[in-house]
Length: 406
Image (cartoon, helix red, strand yellow):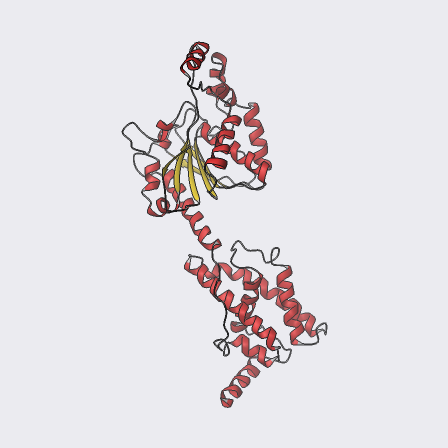
């Protein structure tokens, strides 16, 4: 593994490029030092700042002439004698590199060309088997023979090569990977790049069997031009778009409210507080509701700043309201004797349903924030009350009464 570029200090994101059969560093870095595919990512300032970029290299050659003579020469010279390893063992080399030499990366993006896509795929499956989750957040395969390549079948008849054997259609290695891939429920986000002029990997093979709808990026490329674009390509655009999504998700998941709520009366004229005062909600419960409202306001403002459309949260608001309506119905029938009991019951219901009925992908919105979302609703929704007799008219009268007392 060689890290080509570093983003910000202590960066936790790594993009790993993996070459294919009989490839190497030259797949990504040309003799003149240019990096046709990688440079297009580096040119994006946001990606360059937030991702380190590295290449993983392994030994691969089509034909080793006089292997025994070469081995003896290596022994005499004291140099190692690399040989072609099967995909499984190459993935183990990648695993050790990432685990011990680069342990600080929390989010890994794998971009594999041809057989490199299979190496990355095997790594992900091994990672999931050992840890039940994987550090890989995005997997991109480019012209990868997920179902094998017929060229490997012909090659295997004349050349004894582990890697060619692995690349045959229905080989033991490919069959096992496809079976595990389809069954896995914890796969990272996937993109399959397919060059429609590719005569090495058939189109039917360049997309993996998948339990979900496959995200296929079609390009007017062949097996090799797909990784040597002369200018920005649809493949690059797609990957850049996904990387920006990952950064946005990271920003959202990192939202934390470190500010302590201090009640200086700033919410005293909020409608949800007036409704609580009318219903004679206990002061302790009211203070807790103000805290929850404060946290919800903070989290939702931060989400909005990260580009989340507030309208996307409408279904969650509606679900919270439905829980309230159910408990208010129990209140009407006499299950709860006071507004305090009703408020507690709704909060308990939200807490119980936090990870199920009220599940949301926006991690900052936890149970406490969802309590606050309920009180946000109470401030704008004339259907949310804490007393059976209260309505908009009584609220207006109560408000006028408070103004007269000041």
